[in-house]
Amino acid sequence: MPFPTHRPRRLRSSEPIRRLVRETTLSPANFILPLFAVEGEGIRKEISSMPGNYQLSIDELVKECVECASLGIGGVILFGIPNQKDEEASQAYAEDGIVQRAVRAIKQNAPNLLVITDVCNCEYTSHGHCGKVVAGDVDNDITLTWLAASAVSHARAGADIVAPSDMMDGRVAAIRHALDAAGLTKIPILSYAAKYASAFYGPFREAAESAPQFGDRRSYQMDPPNALEAMREIALDIEEGADMIMVKPALAYLDIIRMARDRFDVPLAAYQVSGEFSMIMAAARNGWIDLDRVMIETLTAIRRAGAGTILTYFAKPAARLLS
Ligand code: PBG
Image (tube, rainbow, N blue to C red; front, top):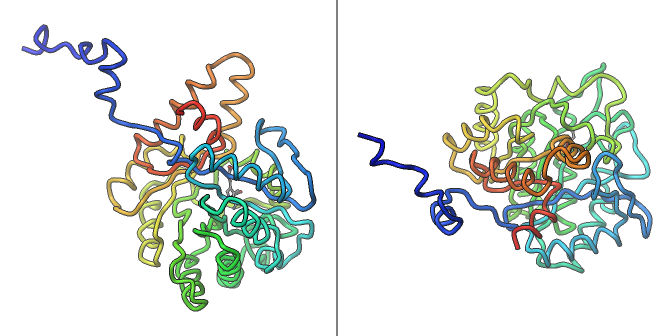
């Protein structure tokens, strides 16, 4: 007879008991903070749709990284916004590009902070697409050469992990091959393996000045209704040499995170993207939800779904709440 013998409320009756039986935990070490590097000095320009997040010149970015290290945050992921954009995304793989210089500066000033670099072209092309545009579409195989060159230049600058987010076919193999050929065999690849063509990236494109000038990203990013396709994408990336995989966005794709966790045994990350952050901030600013509780609840949900690592714009406030 379940009731009255069984009373599940017994294990909810006090905070010490609830803490004892809690199944999911959060730690600052699980978080990766995305940061946006711009040219110049003394620049800290708030992104209007992402309160508390900034375009940062390298000197300011370094300060942010020192703070992340002191908060025990797992690491940062860097996005670069170059002064010059062109058809060939040449600043993406320039030895003295904005991200390459930012990595060197961070490694000098916060040597123990994990630095991941986002490997993509959309911030560097004049048209805002993630690769070489040929006849109105992104050419897969030419783009691979840019990605491989970018990853090598990031790793040479001192990046600890490279994270391709472009969704070209074969990019993990191309990057692994290029890193190995350059003697960078120890650099892991965190692949944005299941990245959807999502409307939740809107605020990021303002932050990174990377909105496509024509068309959209649906010929390379995944169609949101598909789940099995995500499993094929992940399997291919692992075969090609991905050390870690990512699902992106997070909250609208918790089922994909869970499926990936159940099927694959490599470390799994999820990206709580800009639109997820902005929605929560907007509602909180209206007084409609409790910011701190919703922040922790969403991060916990992403962990519960199976992600070990969470890329999140809440990394600093969440780390403070957890300390
Ligand atoms: C680059 C990239 C994007 C994001 C991460 N890497 C934008 C895009 O694909 O359009 C989005 C991150 C966010 O919304 O927070 N390709």
